[in-house]
Image (tube, rainbow, N blue to C red; front, side, top):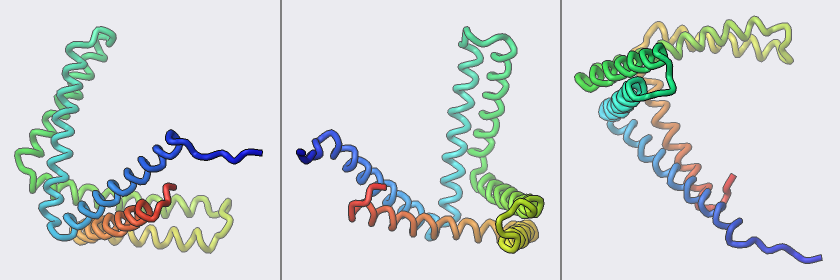
Length: 186
């Protein structure tokens, strides 16, 4: 019986994965620090990235609608209209990035609050099939309370969620960077 020795092609993906993990970890740390140190500027920058995406996507949809030969008439019209909506959203966001960032933060906070309330209520509907009724009830109550808390004070909730995002990015980024350096690739 002979022992197999890893060849360069099998070692290279592992090194590439470790490098990707390290880069992703360092980027997460950087973004997390930016969110914590400059929360408003980071939110505005993120809104700018989303607005840029909307403008580019809008241009692509309009071009597809105008230039595509494989789409039918309604498909082309739909693509052009969707592209125009993306362009309007992107240009509108660019015209007032700070207000757009504030709106986006409040909108997302309200959506998370609604989802947490719905998730808690939905958990109660699965109570009969649950393996642990006590855990399901605790989860449902906490989920509804967390959702109601966000909905009752969306501005405070947005700040709290943004802070939590920053801390999470830093902690998870450090962990990924350490994993990459130590050599764990999975």
